Amino acid sequence: GLAAATSYEFRVSAVNGAGESAKSAPVTATTRSRDGGDNPGTGLPRHALVGYLHSSFANGSGYTRMADVPDTWDVINLAFGEPTSTTSGDIRFALCPPSECPNVETEEEFKQAIKAKQSAGKKVQISIGGQNGQVRLTTTAARDAFVRSVAAIIDEYGLDGLDIDFEGHSLSLDDGDTDFENPRSPVIVNLISALRTLKARYGEDFTLTMAPETFFVQLGHQYYGSGRWGGQDPRAGAYLPVIHALRDDLTLLHVQNYNSGPIMGLDGQYHTMGNADFHIAMTDMLLTGFPVAGDPDKVFPPLKPSQVAIGLPATSQAGGGHTSPAEVTKALDCLTKGTACGTYRTHGTWPDLRGLMTWSINWDRYGGWEFSRNFDGYFGP
Image 1 (cartoon, helix red, strand yellow):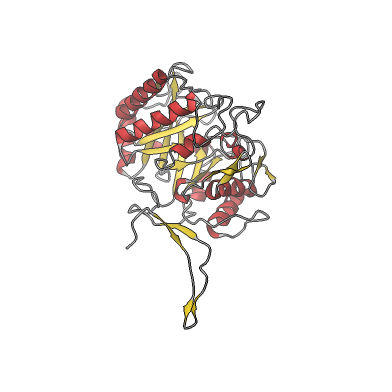
Image 2: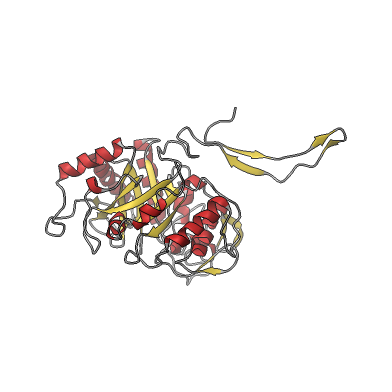
């Protein structure tokens, strides 16, 4: 008789002829939706592999055609849509030019390959930003241009949703903007508004994912923006208000657990990338919640396990902090089964953790598909 995709609080007591015991501490559980996960309307399998496809550029990994992406990938993020200028909000996407990618497919072949992936149950999204695509929606005009231009890309290619991969200086908090629940910085407020508008336009089945760096999320446990007295990096924790405002619309958050400095976990210890401990500690923070800037009265609430995937580089060439398959398996065992946790003690066990994200499908192909071969079957059918 419980409703789908709904949170319930339970307390347990014992009853016998002598009466009823005191009730236990509350435990919260969320029922699964009809699609097998616990957030409705995603259309994703219970566990998923997410990968970025270099569609607009080439690098050392080589160009991979959409039709050649293996069926192991459940979500394919097209990298990247980029702005015409940092503050224009006008996002453009085009396939890699033949001069740079001699084996690039035609526009029509690309669109037909997208349809084939979707017919096979895969999600194909446009990813906005990346390392070189700085996007600062400083005005409402830029916000509106963002909505129009992103919608045009989604409609042109028949895409399922949108991935926000804002890096560098795209997001920052103005001085005095210290409350993640009530942000005031225009680049934050306008992005939230734009994403809500796009979600409303395309409806419940529209997928929305985000790929922030640890600097913009977990670092917020220690530092948030320029701080109460100023002087800190205004980008610290700057994704938190965006994630929080859109948590009911968010399909997946896959923080980039790479190219990161040491980050303090909920155990008060610093954790360094490249091993199971780092992924366990960083993911535990997202699924447990944490005080922002150390303030016990300002706690970032936990996300649902089905909304969280772990972001990893596919090969050592793809990014700093590459983690061996054995260490990734340890992290997954700890988070989903409560085993192989090492010295870090998590605040729960989450068998419904959605899965893994990698940069990138191209680099995985370059590395002989080691990433997808190791983890496609981890969670079972």
